[in-house]
Image (cartoon, helix red, strand yellow):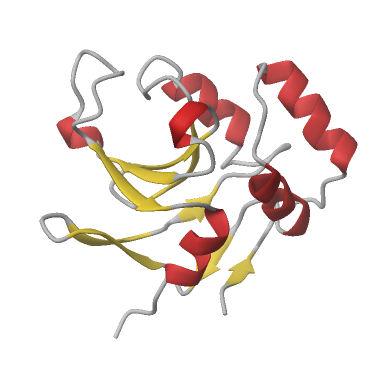
Length: 147
């Protein structure tokens, strides 16, 4: 069972609706539930598997909505022209790689790992994206402790 430590100010559905309107995005139902429950924070356990070639990484933090250091809005602005269309950043690892949520089309609800070291000039070329899970709930269930 995943625990989220130091989550941020509790959100209401109207807070999320205002965020969506301000950023012109439609968040997934499961991700909205996640934000309503925790609004970001530090997960425990925090390791996740990327791929056989990439191995595993540590989920540093989930971004939240509101006045905080790990503000989802700030990361969306920072990575706007760098992530493929239809993805938003929802967390990162200690190396600055991004955990992404698909919010459009065939990637809807899916969680991906974006490796900044393999970034190309064309953000819609997904060679640096690694599929992690079908949705945020599945991703949380898949987190495991450091042995």
